[in-house]
Image 1 (cartoon, rainbow, N blue to C red):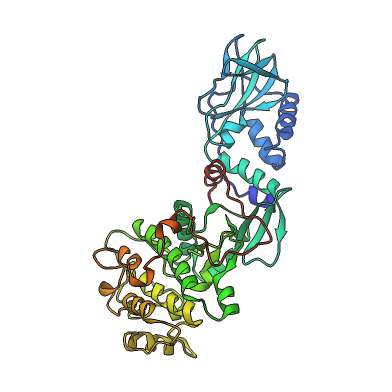
Image 2: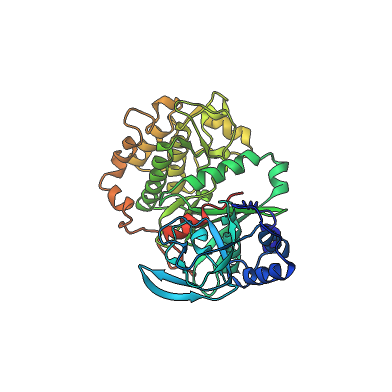
Length: 442
């Protein structure tokens, strides 16, 4: 799979200088061998390495001249062809570079400044490749497939495990044919765009996306605690505190999304996953959309039981549809079933249009959560709690949440009632790797 995916990564090489003379075939062979010995380049296809060699130019440095200076941007990759180079860090000699060794790739890979200086000692001759930003994807894909080697079964998404490490990711694989047949191209691009932009502990993190000739892949944070839907099915319903904790996590996710003018539109237990600490994260952003201030959208989308009246009536809808679905979620978590059900979609839509205000709630729903549900599920979007003057703060200050520690939830010091032992360890990648891999584009 690696070779097929790599062939789809766009690589652009830019020459800083023109050739003064043709590079001989014997030199090209030595350059090819030097590139293939590098741990980040050795898995590239033959043609890709050949293209890199063709784009390299030579330069002779003077004795004492810097080839690389510590702290400068990393825009070039080098191969030492002759002479001697020494590596210094803070003016301290670290090592020397052997002839026909590739160097300078790490600053490119990690998108950082040079961590050491390289200085000519005996009139070094180097072959140089100037790289555009897009070559980062080439390095990253090679590194990614070198790490992610083990597939774990019995996981909602395909789970992949880092080689020789107890670190796991979710790999979402979507058939291109399915996307085209269902005219979902814009939804996929929107999901990718939004997830790469978001950074919230209550929303699944996307690290990168890539593709081959059959699939689109999304490398995601692995939420190894499982689905809320599965737990709800097994338990029948949640007690009030457990439901309150889940709703609290979703409310925080909506707070983040709405502050960034993003409408979610697909809330349901199936799209709520648990991490190893038992905290809920929103997943599946296929229906999410970024709106302009005051903008409405008319796309008919969502799960029938969770669809707001204005979507059914094609009146145009905004962020308030998420508050409607939050009310439906509270009802389902407390009872095990959404309030509007039927044998077909038209029956469900008819019930939704009749409204929830006069509906008799089951005894499992006590007075306070019942009041919150009715206020969230007002037929008029402008009257819904969360869509009033104080925004989502009105939800957090509702009586049902009296005594609930919102600060504890945001700091993750609040103990989750859904925390359980998981088989694999969830990886929290360093921000360094997040910065690297988030640069990989479809």
